[in-house]
Length: 517
Image 1 (cartoon, helix red, strand yellow):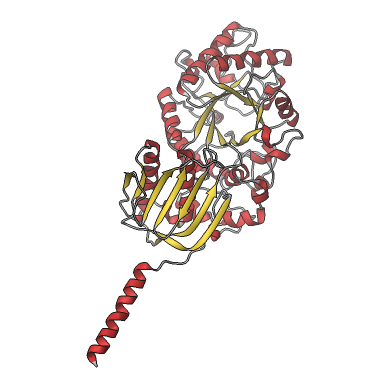
Image 2 (image 1 turned 45 degrees about the vertical axis):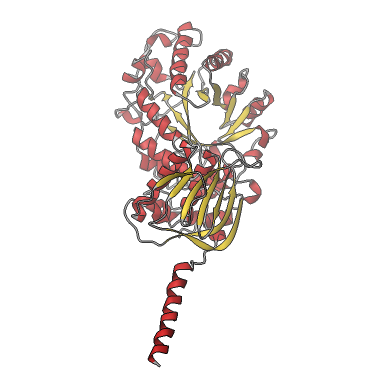
């Protein structure tokens, strides 16, 4: 009798052990709160477990995939306490691993990706840029504590199923004004990291304005040593050496983000006018400026030295900028007569093209004769965007009333301004780029950008507060097709991001419009 009982217990225990080793927690992929919302999600209601034996494999032919694998391991290892290795392979890896797989799919663009998750294997496939976007989705499929820099308790389970995804617009960006207040290399890197999580792919740096010149130009050194010495409020300013700028460009490239440098002209140029007297029509250097009014400065458009200056600046910037665009500003040149402004912009465009770059400028540049492949950044006047389209230009959508992240949420917001609007979180979400200006339809639009002006912002934590959570709204507007966007559904997904914000130490605005969880 004892033998029978012992055998029975042995069988039961063996079955329990066997079951515990093979069973998985049922998880519904459809219930995950992914931002931006993917094109397609199919759930199979089980789970893949990230464990201490998991490795990240990539196709051995791709160094880019190796870098993406290392990026992913650097996210996973601190919080899990694992030592997840990144390895090359020429065949599908074994059970329990992650596989980064190059794939060409006819209906996908460069940023499209597929994530296939089974109990045994998690595969992200696409081109390298798409795989990197897929990695950001994978982060959101794990508990928010995966973002922690100290060891957290598991389990690390991921719902099974298939996600197929690609962006609606190819340009999804943010702009950071480092001229009114200067932000350090580390602060800009921090912003780049946060933008990457929500699949933004461009960072536009506003490098010059009345209050400061922030990029080293070796042929005109006083621009930074004098013109970059102050900022709004009269505090010490700062600038990036060309090596530091190249460091930022490289860092961004590692996150598949393109940096676009802006030199604003002919207005917003007091820092340059204070640095070099010859850029002024009267030959007299201006005083450094630390207030916030706009529209009072202009380069002397009649002087040949002005165009030599611009040629030198664009040449040096083009040499250290691998991205396709140089932003020439062009906004709020209130003291530059239109009869001077138009030939100036025409000539500056030719300089940019001469140095192998494409022209990007605020919507006022559409008053000129636009060169081929020029892009008009619509921020204020729909008629300027329409003029750009009539000339065959693409339009970058950045309406101040929807995308300006320095606009206050409401009248109680500590930082920011409200000259364009108060922009609550739902206002940042409930709009469509192709419905703002008659005659500017989706095929005319390059993408969406969210500018952050820094008159009132002195450090990256203040920038974060103004950007988050609205940058997620703008990110989904740019990534997800309009029929798939719905505020009542989005706000639930957004509310569940607060744990991730906390894990990432993001300073964010806790809008009452959002049910934070």
